[in-house]
Image 1 (cartoon, rainbow, N blue to C red):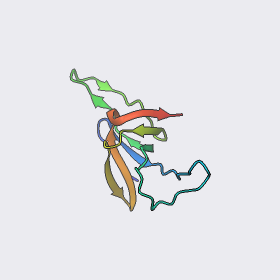
Image 2 (cartoon, one colour):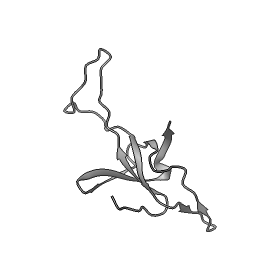
Image 3 (cartoon, rainbow, N blue to C red):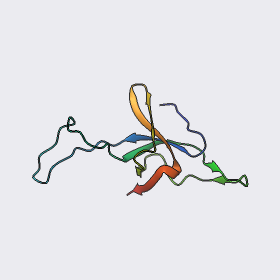
Image 4 (cartoon, rainbow, N blue to C red):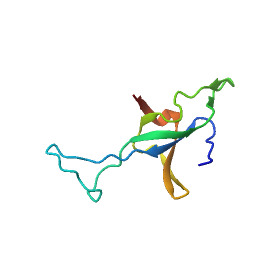
Length: 96
């Protein structure tokens, strides 16, 4: 993928997780459920420019696993793959 986000935009690949019940039954994808709010950062911009002209550096890097707000990302498709685009402010946390 040859994509360079601008400013504090971030491109994330959603991490799909299989859902399992307490008894160990794996639920199929056909079950109506919320999309996970977890992903891996695949591209980042250079950072946001503050009102006084200073660049605010990015706190995430490529490869970080992140949690993001449910309704924040825009979905895009590149080469048949689905990605999410959001700003750094839409992120909730970096997962260790």
